Length: 396
Ligand SMILES: *Cc1c(COP(=O)(O)O)cnc(C)c1O
Image (cartoon, rainbow, N blue to C red; front, side, top):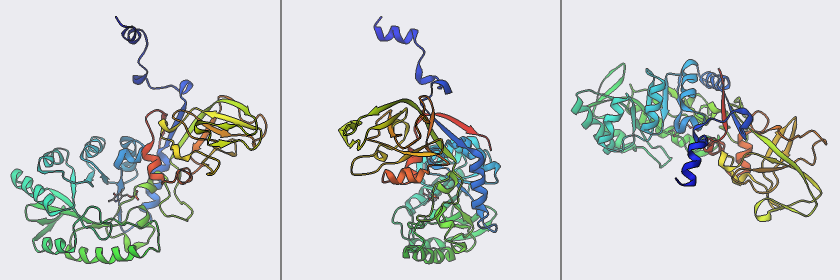
């Protein structure tokens, strides 16, 4: 028997064991009450219009089962995911919800998967529509789908010419939507490219184009607004609002106070506190040199926990900050895989102690500020959150 085989017989396998609080380097706390509150806040932006929830990418990294159940309990009945597999997970959590899959059908063979999980594809091309209709004919059911039109994003979606062509084949409308040959159109939608910049001229251009398309499908419910689009006002709301990031506490609109409640908090433990003399470098690459004798805290979290490496600090670029006991402290040096160094020199002596928990983001350090320090957006930070931190869900 080899040494490694012997080891696996005698040692517990760490990958299968959930860490307990005593041995967790970092902890991720997800406030489902705040998620529910954020949903109600967004839904209340227009009480005449339904509000769905976008729960793609594991509900932006938060955990799709917990998020879906919380949002359903808060009154949400329509959900969007990106991929069919995400749809199947959402369906298992929500037996009766309406679930749309944004990336649509990859081919006709994919349609049976949608049908068996009662998922609705968001269809972005005539070829895809043909696949869906072929499947619908085969099973003899006019199954529902959404039609996605591109109004300026130049990503997925059909154009005006296709909208005109399709509108000529529309049949009767029932409670599921409008019949289109062999299937049913339950939603027409488009997606805004610049809603986070309220004065960008593309917003009104996209609105005008979507109105023209919508007029061709007069009896179909219509949806345009993502989180930021909701804050552009009622012209953008149509029949169904479609927020993602704002539900999870992220900043939807740039240069604007964020009205959402923080949902996600990442904390990490101080492993050690040490003194580093003046003119010494800290961390890999010697990228930051101390300007004074410094008290440096070593935190048990790194980019393997989903904290972005680019949020680190160098002599030429200030990095993100962390929070402990009412004080913010800057990162010093590069973020490493498992450890982050922070400069505690300006904190009262003795305040920071070994073993203490430090907030990397949460109620005091906005995810969007950390993301900005890393040159990215809160979306990327949230969806990068790894499986290594110990997760807690605070009940709604
Ligand atoms: C991701 C996505 C949304 C949600 O966008 P947020 O900016 O997170 O609110 C809405 N619609 C589509 C088509 C999307 O891809």
